[in-house]
Image (cartoon, rainbow, N blue to C red; front, side):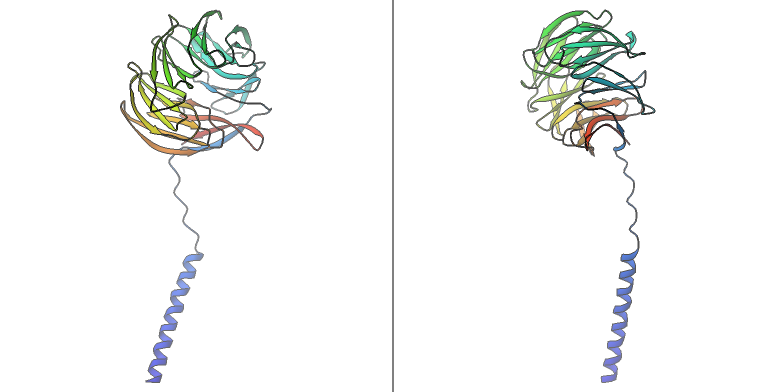
Amino acid sequence: MRNESFALLRTRLRTCLMVAGFALLFCALPAAAAPPSDGYTVVKKIPIPGQGSWDYLSVDEAARRLYVSHGTQVEVIDVDSLAIVGNIPNTMGVHGIAIAPELGRGFVSNGQSATVTIFDLKTLKPIADAPTGKKPDAIIYDPASSRVFAFNGGSNSSTAIDAATGKVAGTVDLGGGPEFAAADGNGFVYDNLEDESLVLKIDSRKLTVEKRWPTAPCASPSSLAMDRANRRLFVGCRSKVMAVMNADTGQVITTLPIGDHVDATAFDEATKLIFNSNGEGTITVIRQDSPDKYSVVETVKTLPRAKTMALDPKTHRLFLSTVESGQFEVLVVEK
């Protein structure tokens, strides 16, 4: 009986040692590589020399150029090679860049000098300056009226400039602090009033405010993009939601959660994706399932303060500005 018990004990011990050996071997094997992500990610960082603040970026799709605001000048990058190809100097307190491709002209809003610099798209040479209200910030080109609209944060107004002549066509009193804007191509320009939580519908030919629509439950709207074909506005709000608004009636169709401190929204017509860049260091990606149905599909990690953004419709790349360890840089985000 004693010998049988000893043999049984020895067998059990041998089994335990074999199991333990297999466990150690399994732990020592390298972990299987995680499958590659099919989402968006930062694929490159383009260092930009010099110091200074930054704001909007703008893509000239036809000329394949990216314009990046940077303190007192605009940096110009080839969107295909991602190389710096030039700059536009003496744009004091630059905020935004608008492009009129059919006229071969670009326009830069200069917050410190209360002017818009007009430059040649081919040579990047300045042509003239146009006066604006105080602290011009966002700026867009409206092809229907052939006018550029600079939105003046310091005087609650918008200065309309004839894009062909560079002459001021008039001023629109907005009744609040403007943020970003979008043009529908049919003669209307839309603009956020962040302090009033309103979206304005502006007649770009008459230079009058036609409608003032509340954005509730979206509060403090700071970014704006448009689906022109389906007449939908995408309004990014500092209350951490994006509102979808009917551009004809002002009805808020739905809201979706986004990240904190949104400052730019872009719509990719080909992929039906809407991108909201957030100062917390993320991009919230929303899919348009239909004109009235939307879903959040992804949150992309970027870098803190990377809250301004531009989309290249050809490559579907996104470009964002920020500073990392004291180095100003442009982030390139793609699938």
